[in-house]
Length: 114
Length: 110
Image 1 (tube, rainbow over the protein chains, first blue to last red):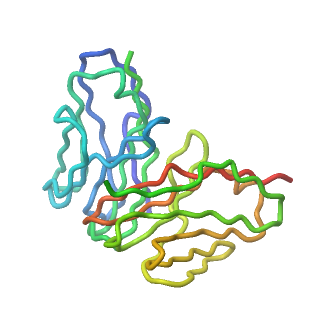
Image 2 (cartoon, each protein chain N blue to C red; image 1 turned 90 degrees about the vertical axis):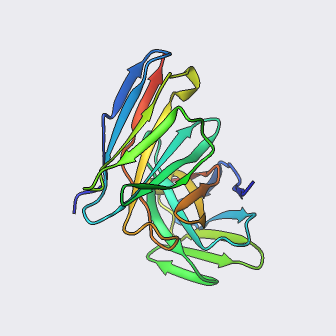
């Protein structure tokens, strides 16, 4: 069974630009969560989608948004990029998105904002 | 603020020894607990999940949960140099949102 895939793997953008990251979950998994990982803040939850609906949202500004498609694939968008948005963005999928479901991470997208 | 705390390390153990990694959490309503391993430059890899008090064993790994003390631990028996990585404790306390500790860096010396 293929794992979680994320594209692109690396991105370099400049301040003020916007970026869209993509995530394809493990086949059969319907829940997709997004996390940001930085050396200073560690791994932080961004948001979670299930059946095309955002169910949970972390403490991030409105510049961070996402969506999920009917095939469970998900995208996240960051508008008006800031230097502090430089991070590893991780997508994780789980079967139903319940508390007892295990989450499996993709390889991540490393975003550098110049 | 729901918190998950881990000693950042590094925790250094000789090859073949038992490595003990610890984690405490603040939210008593937490329902499920996970250990992830992350190699430098890679994404987190799920090692263990545990949901009820007691021990859960999987190969060389044993997870221990004590909800009364709000404490989770991971034991790695017969530690190998390939186990050298950062170990992340994660707690699910609201729906499907994981709160992570800062991670413990483990170094296994040959």
